[in-house]
Length: 515
Image (cartoon, rainbow, N blue to C red; front, top):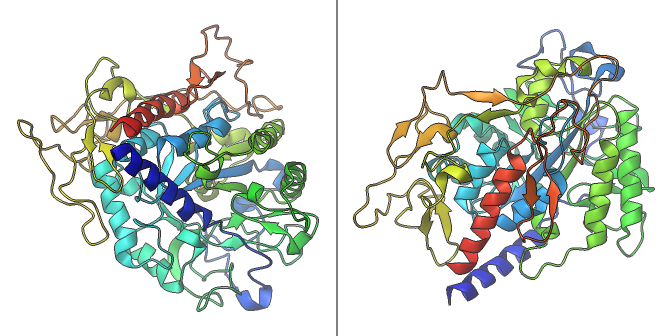
């Protein structure tokens, strides 16, 4: 019976996601509507940045890396991580590190243990409200923080970003984010091409002088408002087809028709994605993004049958990107770390956020810490009828909600309550069963597997096959096994991202089907 309930729950989730594509149809701002003015002499990095189309730090475009942001929205489940992994698990950046991404997480239908694993594997977890509501009240935003910390073990100070569901926000949303000590929002659209003199494709900027995006579509913003010093805005950069400013594509562009046509054409989509990237790459190198709802492209989700042509087209686009020099696929957190401390592409090995530290945890330890080799057999099943989930941190007595985001634990007979992550221990080193930290916060051991970025073009392109590592290692690459078990692709020796997320995804798929 529970299998039927789960299937119906999954189908309900698909209907929810299908209704929230984040589509735009034209410009969302103009210079007159923005009324934007910023004093660059007073607004200085790392804590203030004016909205500008020029690279930060006075760098020339030829010195600047081209960042490609990859984000996903909504619930984290095995089938959504499966969807992301088919595009990212086999890729690395020019320093040899596995690609990282930002997952804007809402909690309805989310399996908390996969949130833990995705975070421990090096990805960014960000806030997307608890129950996926637009123009969210404070309890939806703050409750998500509390629940992600309590049930997924994500440190509060690691949840830096927010995206409004449906990209539906108000001026008050930014004040709520500032009150909750967020670092950035990424809900606004950059919907005018970079080739247009009036483009709104600004590098990330702070709200010291208000917003400069979405001025035509959201009330009571722009012209100096909302003025919130230190809160960053990372615009979402649109693609444009042959219709130019009248043909923008923002979230899940592969679901759109192109050039005014009546049906989807993957070839046309690939063409405008490449042409928009080229405009960024040959211009001021403003970032560009792939903003996804992974469920649309999942091959393991009940009732969803994505086009194999579309999946191949997206991988073809990413393959092509990584053939260009100085292209990095990054999370919002990584992008912002560079913007706050901009250095030339040849010096990116000085940016800690772009490295790939791996936690040095003994694989023989039995500890519920977000690493599959350690946590096998320790997960607790929270069998709620609406959406059951697993966690390392103890099941709540009742389902979490905005009014009660951290209910008391339900302690199984003969067991002790689990201990939640404290502020002075890192997630992979915390034992929630014993309530102990394997190391102190200042000496937790990580191994950095990144390689140097050198001059003269050395290591300045990424890769998608892992067959030509330059470190001379002859060790065989581990296998990335798809969540659905259909085939395998090579994963780079330097990374855990695909191994961790894939193994846990496979385990979670089994658990969700059989609970």
